[in-house]
Each structure stands twice: as C-alpha cells, then as structure tokens.
Image (cartoon, rainbow, N blue to C red; front, side, top):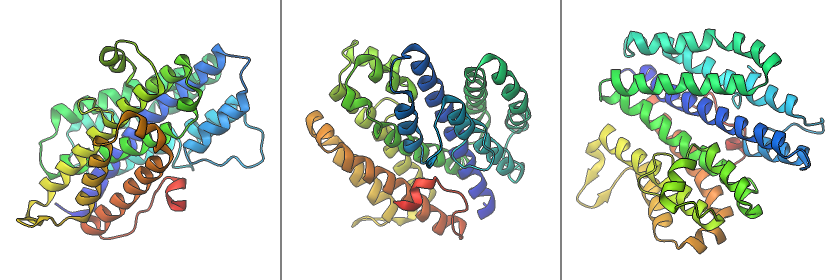
Length: 313
C-alpha cells in the first residue's frame, strides 16, 4: 500500500472519531449548563476548552464562543467542522480504497455542515451536534460493512483507537471525578458514549472510583482506554508481524502500549483515582508518541496536524 494512502486512512479514522467525540462532549456540556443555570458557567466552559487543548486567552468565554471554537472554527484542528473537512479531504486522496458508499457518506456529511450550522443559529447547537453524531455513526457502520479487513482497514482502525485513548484521557482530566456528584459523573459517561453500558455493568452505582475503573480498564467496553490500547496493540502486530521474535516484542510502540495496558490492569480502583493525574499525562504522551512512531515508520514524514496540547506534552 502506498504510504500516502495509508496516512490518509489513518487520519480519516482519527478525524471521524474526533468529530463524533466532540459532538458528544459539546452536547452534554451545553445541556448541563442549560439544566443548571446557577453553576459557574464560565469556569465550566474554560475547563472544557482546556481539556480540548484550546486556549481562549483573556477573552470572555460564553456558550456561543465555545460552540464557535469547538464546532464551527474551520481553522482549528480542535473543531468538529475542521475534523470532518479534513476527513473528507483525506478520503478524496484514498478513493481507490474506499467504497463508493463510504465516500458518498463522507461527502454528504461535509456538504450538510453549512445547512446544519444555519439551523443551529435558530434551534440551538444541539441540532448540529446530533447531525454530526448521526452522520459519523452512519459512516462508522459503512466502514464496518464495506471495507476489506486489509492493511487499509487496519490503519483506519488504528487511528480510531488512538483517538479514543486521547479523548478518554482528556475527559478524565476535567474536574468531574473530583466533584463526585452523580449528575456530573453521568454527564462524563455520556460524553464518551459509555453511560448505558456503565449502568448495566455497575447496576447504577455511580461513584468516582467506579467511573474511573470503567473508563480506564473495562475489557469489554469499546470506548474504554484498556480496550483501545489492546486494539491498537493488535493492529500494530498485524501491520508488521515480522517485528516479533522469540525474545519478545521488538516494536517500541507496541511495547509502550502494552506497558500502559498492564499498568492499568494491575492497579486497584483506589490507585487509579490516586494516580489519575499522572496516568492522564502518560496517556496523552503515549498517544502522541505512538502517532509519531507510526508516522515515521509507515508514512515517512512529520505529522501535519496535531491537537494543540500534544505539542506542549
């Protein structure tokens, strides 16, 4: 496979996951602000922007300005519009690999953004968020049902796995666990698409320890960090099985992913909470470093687009 095609597929996976995750996060936070008008609105919004790697500076932060930065800003890699635009542009360069249905879904999604933005100005930003979630779900379904399980699919899926790790770490960096209120913890779970699964697993026992345990090391939830770490390990092994030998794993990226997965697996729930700040920093560094190594090995040039915060880490 040509390196440019592999790179395009990898970033399609990352951008689609980023757009979906941002739509969930924005929807949940805006709904919470509407439902709890007495809360410190600006502090919550600044915390959200910080988690997403966006620095608004000294400017006043309002729901409208946050929606602009995280949903509509075409120049910021942290926005939904920029992510979906980049996914479509990468898909244009990989048309020979993608099915016609998948390309059409990406193209239609991009063309519908302007209309949904105008609708959001009248009906509220949730209209835009719901549109993005529905379209990315459709696109993900087409990826699952129309792509051959070859290296192209593996690169795309690797992008999804790394983006999920990154997003879960960013959401855990917010003060939701420290606050400990059931409504705030439920919002955190909805932000990462894990609320219903959590309720079934823990039978509604919402606590900071249970939420951290579920998001970090649940082996069966596809949006947990542990699940995505294992998926990324498996995909890297399949992409280059020759790197394994009788002395262990020769791939540095796989070793780092495996060490992190085991570090999560063998911590107690209390230790997960106590070590959470260092774990979050380690996860953000891990995804950035793994992405760099994948780029260096398979794509042969420096990354063009990163989260703003990845550079600082």
